[in-house]
Figure 1 (cartoon, one colour):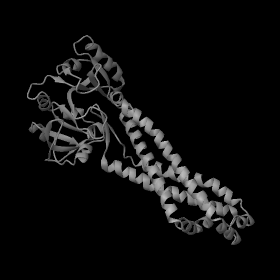
Figure 2: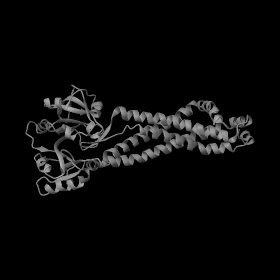
Figure 3: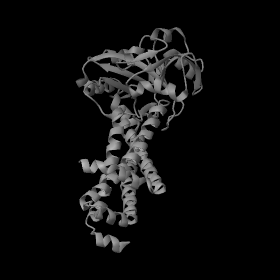
Length: 386
């Protein structure tokens, strides 16, 4: 091990001897790992938004055969009938308005909630900076804006902003672990209903958020809700919140699935770039290897130096690309929105570790074959190849 560590300065000198080739190789690796890490962030976001857990206890009641908030209209009085179903803890009518119903990276989603019901729809662990639910209820056009939406739009408490033809006043910034809460603006239900109808009265909502007492009864209660309204003028379709997001964001899921192939292509590119750089370098250093053997370096040690060079190239380029991708997703707080539902692009630090580890492993693998060939060369062969 000490002998290998002593060779590190020499390996670094060999790398910097060809600065243009080294920079191009590291730059290519960085770009490829940036793409791979960004795709992984998208995939992790989709998984987090659509994978059900044992603690999930929320149902979404939507209009049957509707695909966008603009087309889903349900009578607000349905909440009374839903509350009478055994096993239902609470029901909150929700009006949703979006400035774009198609898949997009920058969509403003308004959620109208009745006074006093905001805490019922928020996931546990939330906090509000610069305000409170009480402040929110004192002003008709007040909005509590999710922190991710606030970052994208550059909003602070006390600002006003407009989207989808509605202007609201930011009364607080919501911090939450739930992606759906971080990317929406919560406003009062009567305000949103009247704004949509341009001064008209409410009476209809987009959906109902239903909390059940026992998460194990989600499917049973969902079926019971749909049976209650099966023959009404406005039949319903009820799913768990995660299943509802998965159904609405199916186009995004397909897009991420296709992007995964690009991620695998990026990994192959990293392998090819490191291998190509090392092979070209070995051809240029035939004489150097002969000299090293003359000085007492064994073939195995020279081969190990080649593997270390591949590891350094992979690690350096991979670290640059992965950190850049993590910084972009962390600072940009991007989310893919479809039909008012958000799939947040993850900025999980574990992606840093995975990406750098993969880049290092690919660098080592790319250097094994050239290292094996170099280690088998005799001194006479090296001089004949010069």
